Every structure is written in C-alpha cells, then in structure tokens.
Image 1 (cartoon, rainbow, N blue to C red):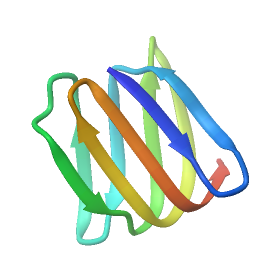
Image 2: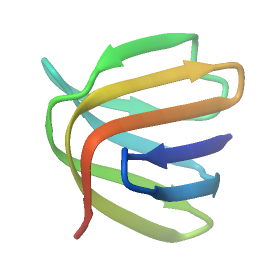
Image 3: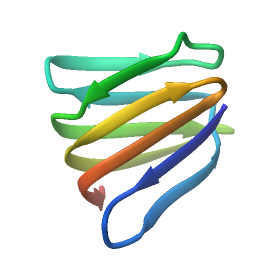
Image 4: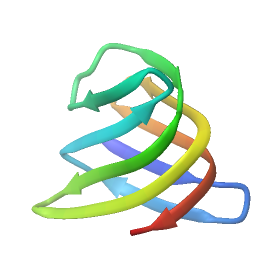
Length: 82
C-alpha cells in the first residue's frame, strides 16, 4: 500500500509500506494492505509505518487518517520524527 504522511510545514513520508499503526482520537488503529475504506480523526501519540523491514516512528498531534483504495493518507497538525 502507498502511505503519505504530511503536515502543514512539509511532507514527512511518501512511499510503499507493509503496515501502519496510528493514534486515532479514541484508540490505536492498525492498517494493513487491502484495508476497507476508512476515515478517522487523529489523536496524540506515536505513528508507526513499517516499510520493507524498516520501521519509521513519528509523534503526531491532531489531523486525519484516510484509507482509500490501496492508499493511506495521514494529514497531521504536527509531526515529529522519534
């Protein structure tokens, strides 16, 4: 699946990934390839993107997560690599 992570200042991640774990406003959500369409508000916490055996970790605060087709779009109010 293709994952894009952006914030107002810059793009943070854009590429293929095997799994995403994100802090939704009401708890953690896990996304794998072929996930059903989905839209949620992001909360505050750790976003993890696993891509080809490499794990990318970010601290996010607010925003949205959308799954459409084979794409995951994360638009966060604030993102910081951790």
